[in-house]
Amino acid sequence: IKSSGATVSLIQFVEAPQREVRLASIKLLNNISPFMGQELAEAFRGNFSQLSSLVRVIADNNGISEEQAAAAGLIADLPPRDSVLTR
Image (cartoon, rainbow, N blue to C red):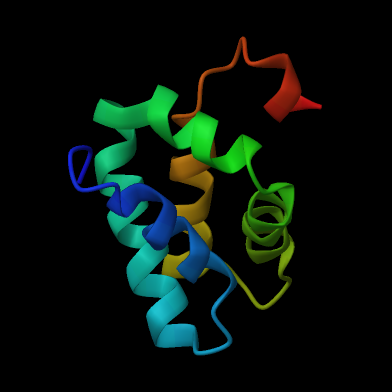
């Protein structure tokens, strides 16, 4: 994923209108985030609307879903000292 530059493509799917595509992307990003936190942070810095999309998924009030759990896990693995992202 690192060498092919697929990170940016995966992050773009966070805003997909199709729930299944969005869920698959968020779950995959959540699974790789412990190993690629800094790379993901850099990619999210390039487009804050995608980070905002993750926050909207978490804020959804339809009960706790698999999508919300994956989005929360992904955000939790981003570097906490990155002041640009935490703002």
